Structure formats: structure tokens, C-alpha cells
Length: 328
Picture 1 (cartoon, rainbow, N blue to C red):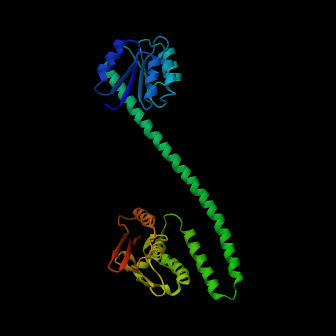
Picture 2 (picture 1 turned 90 degrees about the vertical axis):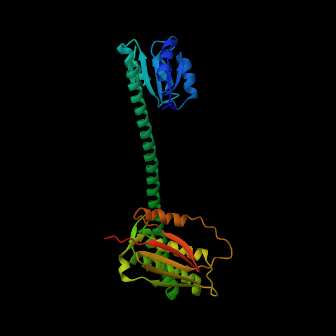
Picture 3 (picture 1 turned 90 degrees about the horizontal axis):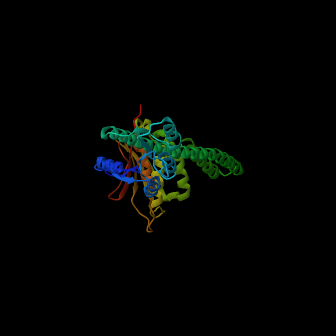
């Protein structure tokens, strides 16, 4: 504990020397022979955890010094050391100086050592409590922000779905447009219903992906091909919501997809893993990848399994493998 600073204030040099010699091997002992000097030291050591002071000193008493020290080191532990144990002094020290302990002179090394150790243990406990309170305060702010966002999301979708209904009614004779609106509504509804780190059944996730892929086919026409190969036994497995949509979106974002060079994407099960494989045909221009999507997936899966998603290139293909969760 040599790196722990302790301040001892006393107007008698002999007391300072005795304290310094007794504890210099255990602490970095700072001493002052007056309250004013002690305040100067505290001004330069705002993180100091422990203050000890004599009570009866000229110009400034120990209690007055401790009171003024609160402005400089509000969290420090305070111990009053005095040969005058009148109750008025003790009460003033407790009420105004925020003392942790009152110890009488003459003190023994063992007695003082126990008091100091208890004071420092209490200081560390209070530091941890303040950190926990700060963390709880941050979490509470995040919770309130999330609630506000949820309230906003409850308003915005209502407006959007009303607009989509109106748009749907405006194109009664256009089958393609009406179907596009329906699939878009289904996509958005699924995302809203599965916000957060929720697990969904693979069967439901595939139904959502089919709506998403329909929108992509309208956009890219014959430039994208999709293939599924998932047996019935795997349909009851689970995975975090919108996982497949993210992987397919990444494949489209980073690869060429044209009529002359169509992008082939296959989704299939391999043991207890789901694989999204696409033909590796990177765009001629660089698309900036933040890696946020992959990092997000790894974090989400880490809540449920030790198996982590894998992303790698193999010959002419790029593969994303994600663990399927067999939850009974």
C-alpha cells in the first residue's frame, strides 16, 4: 500500500515524526504542522483517501480544518486525534468535520494501524458504491432513452402503415405494385415485432427473408438468384431475429449483381449450422466495411451459445456460418 497517501496534521513536530516513522513503510505519509499547511497539501492531492488531525492547534482547530478540507477532498476519510476527549469536541467533529473515527492520545501503533486499515477499507467500499451508482445512473438514462425511442417507434409505424394502406388502395389494378406494398409491410411489421435481442424460430425467419428477397428481386430483377436447402428438422431451431436479412444484405452490398453477372445466394443447413453462401464477385470499387454487422451478430449470439458465427472465403465463394440453437 506504499502508493496510498495519508495526511497527518499536528502542531507538535514530535507527534508528526512518530507517526511518520511508524507508517512510512506502509504509506506515503504527508505531514503538516498547521491546518493552513494541511489545506495547501490537500489542494495538490485531491485524490488523497485519508486525513488524520490533532484537535487543539493554534489559529485553526482540527474540526475547522476538517470542515474546510471537505471542499478539497470530499470523499476522504477523516480521523480526529486528540488528548482532549470532551463530548462537545467529538460532536462538532462528527457533525461538521464528517469524521470517521475519534482516537485518543497517546495512541499505540496497533490501535492506530487497525483504525487506519478500517478507514481505508471503508473508503474503497465507498468508491465502489459510487462507481455502481454512476453505472446505475447511466443505465437508467439509457433505459429512459430506449423507452423514448420505443414511444417514437409506436407513433411512426402507425403513420407509415396508414400511408401504405392508402398507397395500396390507390393502385387497385396494379398487381405488382400491390404485392410489393404487401411484402414491404410484412418486412417492416416483422422487424417491429422482433426488436431487441429476441430469438425466433428458423421457420418464421425464413418467411420474413422470403418477403425481403421479393423486394430485392423487384429491385435487381434477374441479377440475383436465391436457393434454399433446409430440411424440416431444422425448421424448429432458433436464432436471433433478422440474422439472415443482415447476411443477405451484406452479400448484395459487397458483390456485383447484374444481368450479365448475376449473384447467386444459397441458404442451407449443415449439421447444427445455417450457412449463407454467395458467389464471391466483389465490386470493382471499394465499399467501405465497418464490420459492425458481424460484430453485432457475434455479440448477440454470445448471449445464447459459446459457438460464434464464422465468416470466410472459400475458393470462389464467401460463406457466413451461424450456429442454430436447439431450444426445447
